[in-house]
Image 1: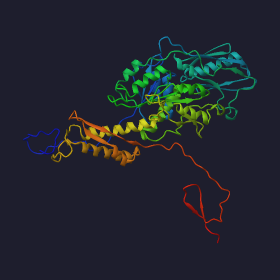
Image 2 (image 1 turned 90 degrees about the horizontal axis):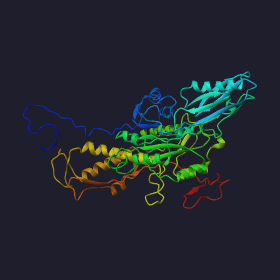
Image 3 (image 1 turned 90 degrees about the vertical axis):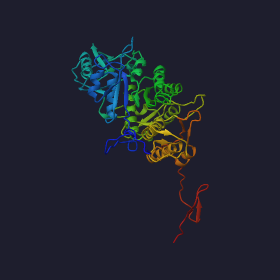
Image 4 (image 1 turned 30 degrees about the vertical axis):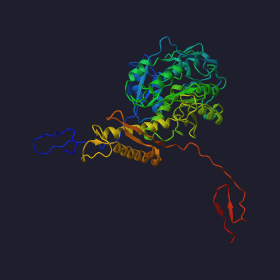
Length: 521
């Protein structure tokens, strides 16, 4: 019997018509590339710590993780930037022995006129209306009441004799990244203190005193083999980054390792001065982690930057993993003031030292300028750019998934023979040549999809062979030429005030064709 059936018995006697369905030549690769938000929950949430769960709305995030919690705020940033893709939450308990950051707003003097205090907590606008008859104590109470009335804020407030003490909703080191500021849009935006009113804020504009970093061992273990392609993990201490690099890296046990083949990326964000960020970037080297650098003066906390970054990356890379992420805006993430932003030279140096960079777009929102990973050196400490961009591994993951689908769908239970073996049509037999042809056909499809280029050299360097020591094994050298991105457009504007019209043929620049100058009629 030349045709290989998988289910219909060869010795069947009962008539007449029997059919088995074979989908191996019809299916297309399809995988749901999830995002995962990682952050601390509060006691108000009902989720089980360290266990990832799917979240379908902000209301669910608030209920499961507690309103105002780190993780709930991350979901606010996520949904502001991505409303269409699947996202899960990985709630963390407060670290043992941790402390919550605090800070004071002090009312120094009462106003002479009525007006509005435009207060911003973690980038969220908290307006407080006051009158000229309000005393310092009354104003302090009004500020505290306005803060406590907004359940989404990451702080609670208590007022005593004109001093409002803010306390973070949870305990942990990243509560130190909660900002307190006034009049983000300034007088031109209609935001200024009423005449006579004076307030003092935390000296650095940030809450202080928060301590405690989560231990991720159990949370990572509970992720098991669930695929999570885009992880927002806001902790940038060396221990946390190492743990997540090991989970997603290229070792035997990593998600990019040969045993698991789950792939994925980790996105984070870090506030700092140019000097501090530059030194930080020089200490890290991971192809699976991308950390967005942003200015000290940004009102939005790092965990919201990280969530927005992962959300926009997921939304774009799911559609096309090879397109650059540049020019994608972070909605509802507030940038630093014009005079407090990194300049061109600083951004260029940060990107050269393993940090993703952002700049301000025409919509006045931060936007991705370069999705750099922290990868900078090879195993011997020599500079290397193999994994420096998120799109490289995103494209490679797509190619490998396409290839795995093609092989596992078309040759799931096949026999293996040498090239040149004569076997009947329809037999479930495959040879190295047949596999090579399938890989070339898949590469052509991937090239049509804009993922790779240079089919000729791919064919030239592709090797498919039977293992000399194991007759049941095929070895493949797969050499894709990943498509690149338009990231720099350089122009030499070689202008003239007037061409010399007395010369019929003017050659401009070395090795340039002649320009024919029309004669005067």
